[in-house]
Length: 286
Image (tube, rainbow, N blue to C red; front, side, top):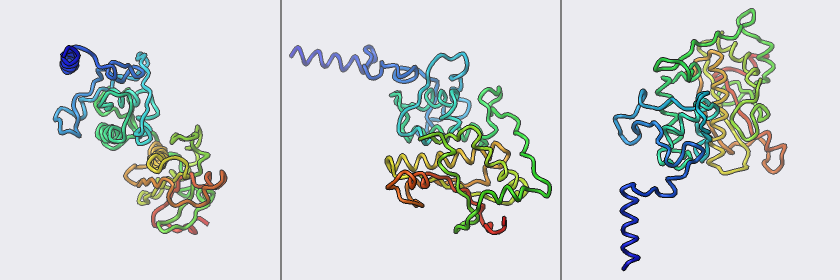
């Protein structure tokens, strides 16, 4: 009887919040269980208080000593602006770790991406965290220089386009990315400068960007990584002044391999991003 009374009392105390549950009392790197955060509503749950102007953008700055480490199955789904910067990681953990367990689920990552789309009005390339206004935009960078005649034919030929069912395609290999990451290596985006110049000279040209992985890892994580790598390429083009509305992104994971996944050389070929000029002929650059 005494044991039953103690259990009942403990349950009531936990419900009232007078005793902190151990799982909620842990501090996951300064943001997890027990961290109050600044989220003011959940749009996914129909909370009218959620939305732009109600998200906490205050963390991750130079004066913030917290460590906003990202972990969980949803991390590869996050936009690079959220995943790869202190301010972005703080924004995710302070607002979208909804169950306060220190891990980002796919649902939480998708909610963070949607919120960031709303906050930037779909123009992520020109967003600056430290801008004082509500939208946070910095002036767009100038477009890259275009060679005489409108675009660099020799540079475009160097992409070695192949024809696929959508148009003229070239492949960007795994070596352009950090190992196991969707982040482009320093200087890797320079390879896209010629393409950006061509797109500025042909404002009606649309681009399809398809990401692929090898078969190592789970199918779901591979799909997420392939989409995140395609997004990194699109983001690099957007930073060069290409309108993101002209770019279509697809993540295929380990499907559609171009080589065998049984050896390292084949797996490296399968880890790729294919960039296609929709409706264009590959031989037009010869």
